[in-house]
Amino acid sequence: MKKSGNRGFYTLLALILAVLTVLIVLPLGSIALDSVLVVDAAGRHAGWQNFVVVASQFKYWASFGNTLVLAVGAATLAVAIGVALAWVLVRTNTPLAALLEKLAILPIFIPPFVGAFAWLLLAAPRIGVANFIVRYIGLPEPFDIYTRLGIVWVMGIYMAPYVLMIVASALRSMDPSLEEVGQVAGLSRWKVATTITLPVVAPAMLSGAVLVFVIAIGLFGTPVLLGWPKQIVPLTARIYVESQTVPPAYGVMAVLALWLMALSVAVVFLQQFLLKGRHFITVTGKGFRPRLIRLGRSRFVLAGSVFVYLALTVLVPIVVIVVAALSTYSWSGRYTSENFTFLWESMDVWQTLKNSLVIAIIAASFASLLGLAISWIVHRTNVRGRHLLEYLALLPLSVPSIAFGIGVAALWLHLPWTVYDTIWLIVFGFIGRFSGYAVRTISGSLVQVHPELEESARVSGYGPVQALCRITLPLIRPSIVSGWVLLYSIFMTELSMVLILYSANIRTFSILTFDFWYAGLFSRVASLALLQLAVGMAVMLLVGRIGGGRKPASDPQALA
Image (cartoon, rainbow, N blue to C red; front, side, top):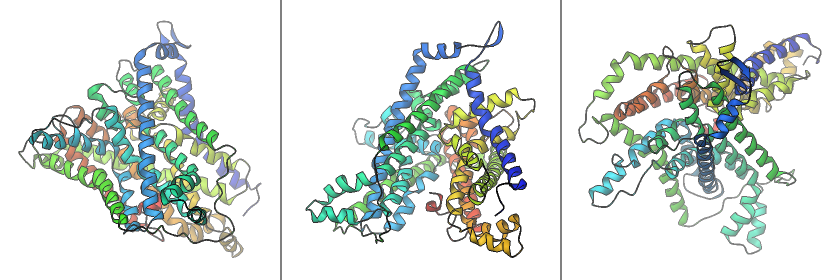
């Protein structure tokens, strides 16, 4: 590698830093600027009026409370389910554990809005199929998904795979001799699990909880879909309401976005405080081979419980959506192909789908390229300031999407270049908010490739770019493709940020689905959801085939 004084490396560093400044730093700064910018009869001036308005009205505090309750509840449920699944599938001899682990990660590929809509059709009062069956046999309706408990249930079960992936990795790296010592001391399997295993993987559990909490406070589709009928309005929904006023209350929206960001920062600091001064080292120079806990007939019960989880999150919701799409209206008992004919004939459907595909492909490609450049600068050069790139790229990961979208909208509203009413406003927002995923995915693979391979190529006369393209890229191609697929799946289903950035001429498929739900056309929403799932899976499988390698990109474990 060239020395730190190499002018080319510093030029690339400066270029990437400029891009990150425009895509990340300035949007976040715009949120703070808009929060203190007051527009009144006297013109535009600085002041604290927006903070006073938010702090003095009960509806904003109620939304803050709803956000906190839903996020804490979802994180708690996701950790409980995720840790249980990880222990069953990694530490026991449950049948088909490897296959079940891959299947258990599938719920993260179900768009949040689709999952919430499926449970609406399952457990909503009057129209829910579960209530319909119970009512048919003469019993009162037991389910009401339009409650805080219902919202927590849906959010928690679909976020549990994030915890599963994190905790499963920690369990695999844990020395089993720790559990064996407990067994020798006479502890039961339950005691060993609760007093030895769980405390050792506590950092992983806490990381999963923090991740779910940060995702939950930024969710829009699920809490709005299930909370709107009874006015359970979280901060994301309150921001959307403020954006629909004339003129939009940008100052209030910025303050609410700061509240969301403050929640994210607070929970990260809480995680650091809880782990401060404690040691969790279990991987040492001493080798070990993980040993499974041998269970009797109960292993079949545990395997069955995993299948139940899959049925509740994937199988049953998809079946319900298919039946709803074939119905004239919800559970009318009359079936038709009209909703699928509508998909084929509607220009609105194909235009919004085209917009979504173009935006997702462009944004995922540029974000992956940016992530590759940052990872290579950080791990393959020694130029000063290189770690600043990584820090800036990862910074938005703890910022809720709707809050970041407010910053992007505020920034380009003040800049002379016109990107409003174009796809580029959404593309810029996506790249800035989510490029950190590409950095993490690619960096994790790049550090496993020893630099001596590129050094050997350099000795043979290759330049830095040639060595990267001919040696390194083929080796890390699976991680690049995995990162691209992850970004693509996020961009195709993202709703909260797009709600702030879209225009009448640039609508995405998620916005169209939301509009049909708002109009009460549930059967149409079901057909749109199926089309969204089909297109998303088709593109991911196609990219997986094209860019496959040692680790298939379509493998959910590769995205972990």
